[in-house]
Image (cartoon, rainbow, N blue to C red; front, side):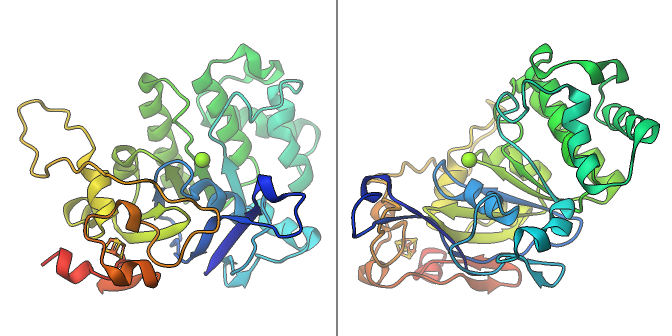
Length: 320
Ligand code: SF4
Ligand code: MG
């Protein structure tokens, strides 16, 4: 709720007057238990920062992160511990996110040691069980990350996240570093695990065509702001925000005979800067509908139809 994460801009680190990079600037959304909430937008729009703030890898600059009714945004390290068990993360780069000096058993076992009572044989069996769940073998437990392919490494990362039975998993572009042939396998596995274990996902991606299949609802971010939130089907069939329309129009259609109903929208204009952004709509520099009010006031996210939220001053005119 009203989540903000600002970073001091590098070029002002040693200056008296700091400038801030407003990576996430006042966004609100909710994730329902058991659903997959897709978070999409171009790189640099603040989606990873949002995910990292939720697991408290970053300290939020402002706002609330309400988990099971409790605001965890400002909890101390000690009070945060029980929530760390409930919220886990799968990272984008399976090459960088696994410690190359640790065996697979140690990587998966680390969370087990901190958060559970499994010891000795029970701990080992739990590790074998987790390897089995993600489609690896118990013989893999004593090996090191470099002995595995990218897809296998991501399976290890998933096993690590599952090790302490979390409720919510932040999946930060978990497949974008993988070969296309492997991507579907990992996504299917994540979906199966969700059904078996009753997991809730925040699924971050820059690729709208991938989140469409996995998400129940989707939020579209642009330069640190939330532009549109609605159910997955509704977003694809009836996008209301000019930015979402442009994003959707750029998805290639796999069937060469199929005619696109949407003409491809080419965005012109400069992408604005998240450093000291000017007042008004963040998308205004690229929006062909932009009017005076767009540069003066930041549009609030409003419920246009039940469950369909849009942040655009001119949403009614544009969608007449
Ligand atoms: Fe475009 Fe204005 Fe809507 Fe922003 S508020 S998306 S600039 S029409
Ligand atoms: Mg990212």
